Each structure stands twice: as C-alpha cells, then as structure tokens.
Image (cartoon, rainbow, N blue to C red):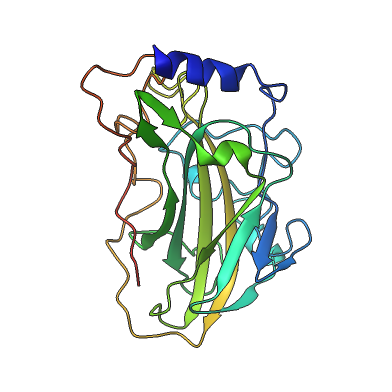
Length: 242
C-alpha cells in the first residue's frame, strides 16, 4: 500500500504527461548543441517513447536508420573522463536508467555501428527499495553524468542512454504491468575514445535482443508490488566496471 501511494504522488505531479528526448551530450562541463553528437531520434518532435524491444529502432531510434548516423558528428572523449546526457526537459517519470556502449564498426557515424552482439553496460541507476516502497532518482533529474571506464580500449563507440519510464504501472513502468506497456526513451551519442586502456568489456549483448519484454524489471506493476518483493531487478547485463 505504501508503494501505491508513493507512486500515486509522482503520477499526480504537474508534469505527469511530459515526455522527453535526450538531444544533448555532455563532455566534462560542456553541453553540446541539440543533436550535434547524438543521432537525431524519430521522436524529436513528438517526444513519444519506443515500446517494442524487438524492432531495429530500439537500438538508437534514429530519424533515418540509414542516413542519420552520417549526419551526426563524433565527440572526442578520454577514457576515465566524465560525460553525460541532457534531456529536453525534466524527466519526472519514475523509471530505470542505464547507459550501454558498443565498439563501432567501421566507425561511429556508420549505419552498421552497433549491430550484432557488441553492447556492454557501463552505468545504471536503479530505484531503491525501503519500507515497502520504491524511490526513483530519475524523477528529480534533467541530466545525468557517468564515467567512461578507464580501461576501455581507445577507438570509436556508440554510447546509448535509455530511460525506461515507470509511472503508474511501468519501465517507464507506466503501463508495464502488461506486455509491451513499458516506455523507453533512447539517445545514442557517437564518440571517439582516446587515452584508453586494455580492458575487455562485457558481457556483450545485442540491441535489439537484450530484452524480451518479460524481465521482472520491465514487466512490473509498481502500484502493487508482490508480497515477497525484495528489490528492483535491473534488466540487461551487469555493469562492466572497466
């Protein structure tokens, strides 16, 4: 019951209907122009979510699956440095947030980059569970930062931010108590990593393919948590610490 009222309070917030994109990439303290380093997404006007975890658009949700990559610049970042994503408005909605990276082949600005089992997780932000309720850090954010793993080998990569929106029932756990109800907000930055190390990132997964849609962290009713609920289970692979 506590979980129900905690979520209800979030849902009743003034910006409950607000959706968002992640158009800006942050390097250190510098915020890029919209879509300078992040592939412009198909929802750049509508702000609408991706709901199918099996469609090719689930990878980066590009405006054009063939041409957007080549129209996007590639940022130079150092291994071990701080980077981030900035949304086009407050996120507000409860949800799970993570970042995955993929070694780009042949280059970060190629349409072929990110295909196959090349993705690994470098950051995640899970809700915490205490006193029978979930608390979602993402509801107070408009941007977030993380560290490029110090031991990541130099080279070109895609960096994919995903916020799985959870409000009412959802990962943007909103209507996620039924299959296909979760709402995903995605942005892929193109980067060239310099001063890297000799690590071996993993485990590697494919996108789409990383989720079935039936994972406990996706197919969840946060209004009515199970009596044996002990904590939120993040979907996808574990974080590679580098």
